[in-house]
Length: 444
Image 1 (cartoon, rainbow, N blue to C red):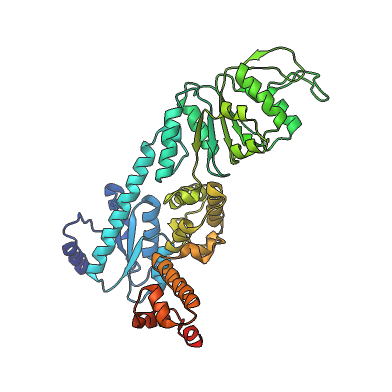
Image 2 (tube, one colour):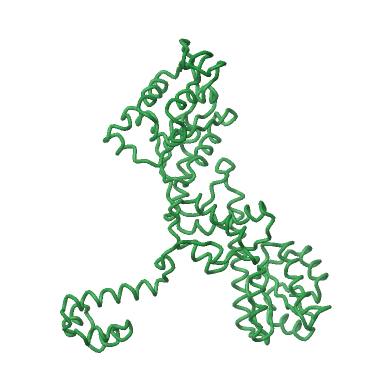
């Protein structure tokens, strides 16, 4: 508690006698206690000496506390009706604010909530720190992500060929690296190649290498990605875009585990593990004659489907906070977090570009932010209103739609409308009035 009024100190001590309360009367003593005891929650007055009638010292103290202990929840006490400083304190990173004279019952609720949020965030950080290093970079608490991680942990130690299926931006390469780190080949190379990003003539040379003089410009013998991955893992990203001719050559390599460089006659044995990924429907491509069925079975001994971000309940906000920390550090910004509306928008957005889109959005917001907190405006999400509907709004929208359908079906006969909806006529009248449908009913 950072408060220079001794009378209020005593009152608050008494009000929070079930907590361990530390009291400081100025910035220096507050920071000393903060460093020594690392409290979860700080209740701080803005009017502190040597500026007890102003707020300059209070905001300076707030900034110092959040810099030294960014996970501490700071509740700021402001003057009654002092909305500007209350909003400013939230923008600087305060958890919440309360107005003087203090409503002690409300203050206890705010403090209790601050402790609970601090506890949940600490648990989340602990879980992340305890997670296996092989799943480094894979962030998420949703059940669908947990299922995918469990599959990686099972298949990683084997030598099975793994197929990662998922939309663009779902983290397929991160999972491929996790499979590699779990395998006995973890000390070998991890070599990745994007089959969709390289033209067909070059892709063959990139994969299989070539001998000196094999074609114009081949001035020296060059190993391909397959050879470079010996005793390690070769990651074939977007294998669904591999040209048919190369599919045949890749299948032969998988069957015989030997390759020939372009322009060469020597058969070279290669010991590698294959992990593949694609955003395409391979079975559909097989039916269209664009992907070999025999190759499909060779490269997908185990398939792991990675969920899109829209299906990962709760993960969007978790990832956003992670990307915020990275971007703030990268750009030298002291951004404390997201506003409540911004977090709601992040959770409500469909994220068609998945994690990659979210990361780019947060990075841009950090650059554009003018305060210590990212708001809805900085996110610049092109979202429809439906993304932000509360459960109450969803129910109301469905109720109104049902009434309109019943009115259309009953041709304006309100008795019939009430019967179709299973309500009494007085209830129907109330609903018509509530949703502004009375005039429509009168017109019919």
